[in-house]
Length: 289
Image (cartoon, rainbow, N blue to C red):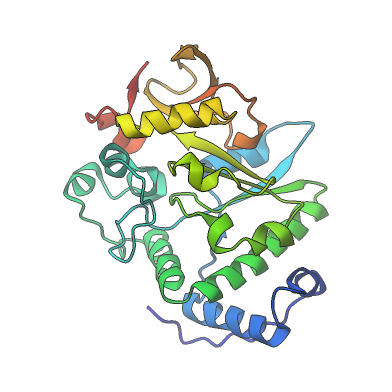
């Protein structure tokens, strides 16, 4: 899936300033060119319906948000991008089971994925291939795209936010800690199923919401996150905006209004209505409202 175009990347002043002390300029340019030559017209970051809701939300604290999608869990056949995913989560993940990324419920049940079915799927796979085969180039291009996103937000008088794990569970603070130093002004955020002890020392500008699932192991971890001051997201068998008021004795916030989980008050479960393949769940991943 290589691309024949040749990139001749020239960094702007803000990128040069951000990478200072982290990369030699010539090395960085070479990595970005490697990434762009492989991806062609495909970007790492983009948007989604929920991200668009966030960007259009009327607020006195507005943000411009973007998101990155790759094949979730082991669906790419290249790498397990969600090592803590439960069977229920894998079976109905939005990254393969909803909206533009939907492979169809029957294909999900068979774990049968066609990554050439449309441009959205092709782009997801190309990102995954670059990450697996040339992680250094991948991270360099992340810097370029996030810098562009930050500058775009500033030009609009907005703050910038980014969600690198749109459909994955990568510990970015472990594999690329420099990102959170280079972009201190950005609000990073994600959902995660990773054990709390792997993420407790996350950067201050990285907001995490735990993702509640059907197994005892996951639910035990959810209790640890909640006790440590994090929120946990729960998928309910319910219509949008018709969620239960409480769950396990804690109030529920409607997580379908927008995607900016960093704006949620602590001490809550974040309710999400089942969508796409999740409407057919029988594993217990989707909770009865």
